[in-house]
Amino acid sequence: MAGSVNKVILVGNLGKDPVVRHTQDGRPIVSFGLATSESWRDKSSGERKEKTEWHNVVIFNENLAKIAEQYLKKGSTVYIEGSLQTRKYTNKEGVEASTTEIVLQNYSGTLTMLGGKPSGGDSAGGSYGGDEFGSSSPMDRPRAAAKPASFNRDLDDEVPF
Image (cartoon, rainbow, N blue to C red; front, side, top):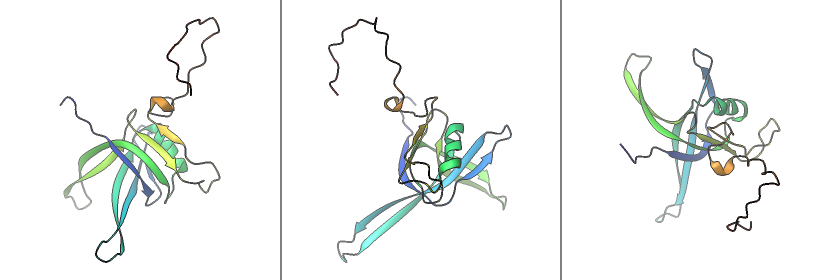
């Protein structure tokens, strides 16, 4: 269907350390539960209420999987962009079941670590995406090297900042 979009954006906290599995050809697959919460004050009682939703996240992007494996821990705050996918499987009891997951594929997923420093002492807040530059947004990509001085084109539409 032309014109359809399947994109999920979430900011939340990991409920457990990520689980890393490997395909038969050695590529990593990382999965974790992500909690998103909303809170409000009940108008009738004035009591503060909170609702938490849990989301299953699966990373098939090899670079993002390595970052998640190395830096994400239980409680880490992350921003993710991926697509919603539902798959069927047979559980341990032999019953067919289905699950819906947020999937970060190659070239179509983003993972940004938010919050303070992780326990390893490395700085957090890195943004990682699905292309060779480490980010899926053109605005986040490194700028190309400056043109040689012989490039003599006057641009009237330069932005002053």
